[in-house]
Image (cartoon, rainbow, N blue to C red; front, top):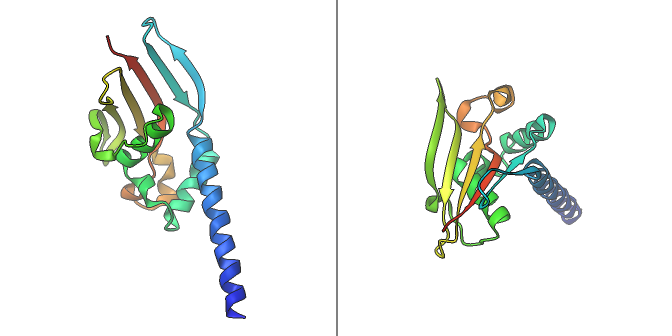
Length: 154
């Protein structure tokens, strides 16, 4: 009987993990790409679906996917998905802009360049104060990727 319960629990955990992954990709899916006056610059913005982000916050607050609370790791995962480089690690990202509120950072722009130097990537991650009632404290807020900029280097 105990083995049956473990199998059910295992399936439920896998379904929840799949739902979290699907939610993550839905939150970070590009909704618009805009080329500026620079021919070698492309900026992709992500939609901010409040219900999906609140669901992600509840999932993280329940003890899952704690990496979503680390802005470098969130930025690195977004760059892996966007830039198609699997070897991007959080420490390799350089913060180039940090916007702060009274209680800490709310927006961080990270920069990364691959070894070939062909382009420069900038990813913006933000955390939203409207998630505080779910998260309970600022350190538990999830970071959400909001834009990625790709600038070709000469």
